[in-house]
Length: 261
Image 1 (cartoon, helix red, strand yellow):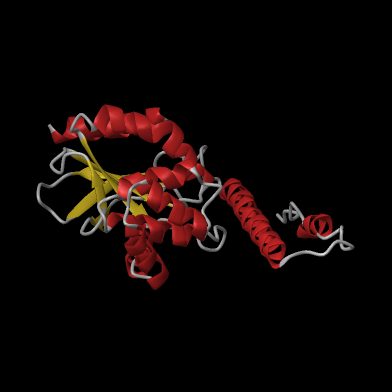
Image 2 (spheres, helix red, strand yellow):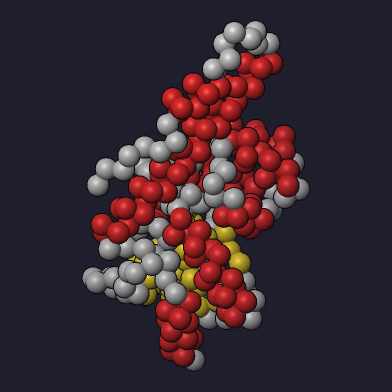
């Protein structure tokens, strides 16, 4: 399915430069260029989100996907270097492969994640693990956003950046990422050095490869397994795909908690 491009730049350009009879200063021209760049970024972002929705619908993924994909049995995931919330010895480990530009990931963050956090993570029942899986082909800002999260993690502020990125999914350009680093109280100079220098690139690629081995093809992708204390890996035996309702997670987690007893 081909989607017609929206917000044509030509309309903006004609409007911006219509009063050609009036001289423009260098500052005016710079301002117009910044506005053009902003429009281009917004166009790419919205187009990427539309492409994601279409692709999810075509593949039967997303909010309506089945809780347990056919053919999945188990996988072993490496937790070393991953970002973790909750009691490290919680009975169940839940691993999410996510994309900060993905609208379905955003829906999970807004609707389902808070309930999982309140009812299972805060209560010490579930260890929540976040891994990167930016869909580069349809989300042009996702990879850099993932790097931004990892650069924030270097300063102990991964979850603050995680929340900031998902709260502002329509503004993930480079300037936005720098603004978020300041907002969460990170050292902006160190953050910029990390982001511009590609320090986090290898970590994001490693997460993506780990996801591919487990069978991740879209986001969000969730894997659940029983926690082995002090282990650097987890054997996951249940997989949920897409922005699932909280009830599906509750059933899966409660089943694993019961089995752990």
